[in-house]
Image (cartoon, rainbow, N blue to C red; front, side, top):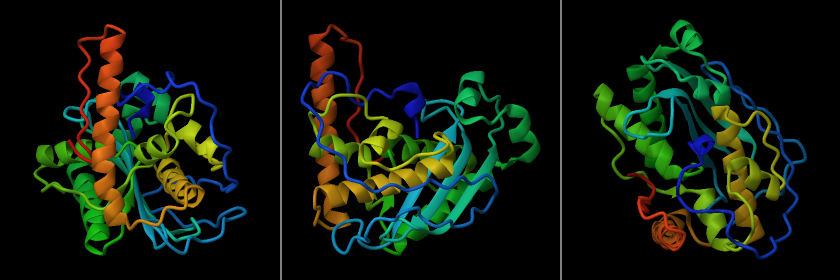
Length: 276
């Protein structure tokens, strides 16, 4: 997901307006450490959404990696799953890969996977990249939107992993729902950071085991559903995808302007979404 390095999408500590009150939709994020994760029930599930971009089943996707450079870093763990309209897990799969490079200590400190464990228990990187790509491609082909928190990180890193291992990338993933972009749009002036942990807490979505690919993916999906409920989103997933392209560009431009104001003239902010 890329948040452990505070990815430079925009600054989240410069706004001063009070936040909107969170909705109540307390859930527990399932942990998945095996190759195939088992669905688990929600705790106090919210009422299922009946309209809007999250009304039907939604896919969820997250990567944990060796670092935050989408071109050179590698996949360590990945999760692709499906939630129903209430947020319950109805399909899930988690992968552990041998990234074929050393996992830096800083990355291990975040997601807990050491080089030794990845080499001993991880599957070949090329196979994992191919299977994750195929799983996502199948969801898109079925018309199921995929939620990814800070989508350009995960989809771009997967793209470059595909190019590295001879796997045809998903050139234009769609429809994608990025709770980071949507939350920033609908609650723009809320003070504070926009990491998944912070935003999940704001929407009363319990995230247990942050930086576990399964836990993060599932929590991101439930945050997307909470945002849709909180702001009564009625647009389709396809329409929301198009809107997010423009919103992400505008947010990046705003961050670039902020960097200029504080003298950070070397900052390079890319507003491309959902893939770079």
